[in-house]
Amino acid sequence: MFDLVVGVGNPGSDYATTRHNIAWLFLDHTPSFQGANWKSKFKGLYAESSHKGHKFYAVKPQTFMNLSGESVQPLAAFFKISPEKILVIHDELDIPFGQVHFKMGGGLAGHNGLKSIAQCLGTDQFGRMRVGIGRPVHGSVANYVLSPFSKEEQVQLPLLLEKLHDPMLSCVVEGINKVGIYNKKNLLA
Image (cartoon, rainbow, N blue to C red; front, side, top):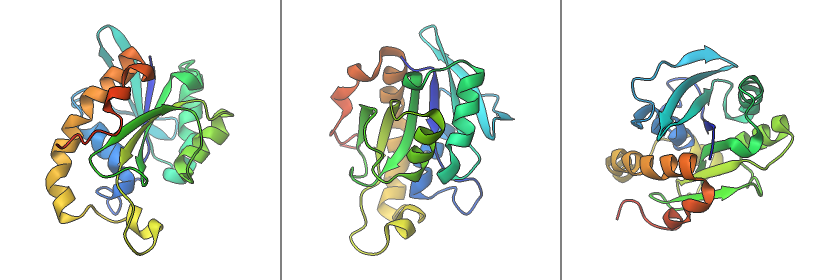
């Protein structure tokens, strides 16, 4: 079970609809947090939800991606949430668009948001909900993650955001070992 869901992203209208902000797009559209009372504290916006009697929080750090840990660590400390009870939702280059993979701990794959969280928590042993954005065929990775979704992806994005809800809730309530069924499956098929 997880007590804190972290959606990493970048604040500001320039980044709102970029691939790097897919976690924020998800938190803004998921029924668990629609209409939630988002509060500004801990260098972020956080809200509370519950499912099947399990209360959990979500946070959208407002520090920019590369400093996400500066929001996650104080919030987790305040609510006494240990790292293994934190699920970080983030974009993943090495997974195709339309797929989601879950894992506990492990490498940071060059993701600066994850690096910041691991550094501030003092461990990489937190859950990951890795939402596929695919890798660019050509050009810079930095430009790719900070660019809007393609026209085809924009058409599919609302369905993807809807389809991510059940896996996230299952992971939060039942644990990461129960959601392997979603790994490597195209949620849009």
